[in-house]
Image 1 (cartoon, one colour):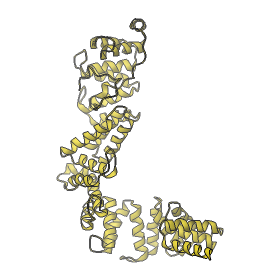
Image 2: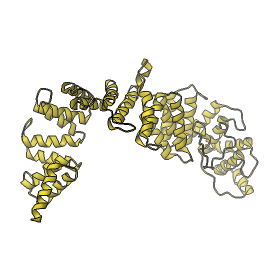
Image 3: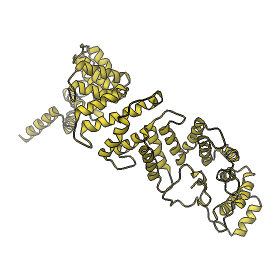
Image 4: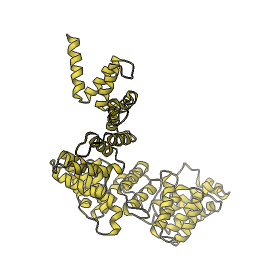
Length: 455
């Protein structure tokens, strides 16, 4: 309902919250009030809070017959005292033609006065006017600026509107993931019933109309258990729609990463057998589609499948090529995998120094496998100078993250008294941690110790 004429802002039990038109709801809740006669006396003496209160009574027909013209008179008296609340209320009546003719230009003027005092609901309302070409030339950039001001104060409607702009590419690049993040923020900060359902219904509506990025978000919601219960089968259904669409025109290029994301997630579902049987060849096809669009995680997936010959004929050179593409984009797991291939000469010319460089680069992102590898390389002294102190340091970093091999190596360091004080208790503790992670050598050590103690 865009009129807002009979909406009571103090009633938070609405089952279907309005998003595009709820800037008439964002004012403080009512307080216990004095008798009407006493309030009128205080208001006549110029108290702006009471003037706004009486304006609310007339506007919403509480304790008096609804009379928006009378409400306007009282709001104006409060606004003339340079009060943001009164200015906002005057703008509301012009914005929704309540007791006065519709006039978005005057609404904008009054909203601006209140916004100058950082009155948060007004910031969102100005964003609405710019976005909807009401009272000003349509300007998505200005709308976004105003929404962001309100969102900084956790204004739920503003957060929702930013999400819509991300989804539709209004004033900024299409970004379905950011849209979903903003929608979640709106749900978290919304103080009205049914907000989560409204967000879900809005996205569903856009998805059913064929909006690819909305379809992507629905698929991700089912995939990640966000907003709606997890359902891999439905995730696959929805992700198939944007994933199967090619980029037909230059205007769609901004959505390339979103399309690639859908393809990559779909590949993951086939690869892991979520929502259906395991299907590695089909998984590889979807990973490849995403990888060819530059999606770094998909490039790693393609590289790993080529390396293992899973779903595609084994090709170590191809694997290295795809891992290199992802490594250049900063994917730590790609950097580590590529480093290991260079270090071992696995399908590509052997270069232990180059392998060490790639692994060391991956440690910058605290990637545990790379930390473990760097520790091992320092211990062996192949590819760099031997340095047991650094070997222990990197093994410890990986062990902290629960890396079983690193825990096993560090345990040995404590037992062997290699650049750490011999500490059997700590060493055995690390062996047990590694064993609990499934490390076979550590399990054998623990079993041997256990049998020895029993003897």
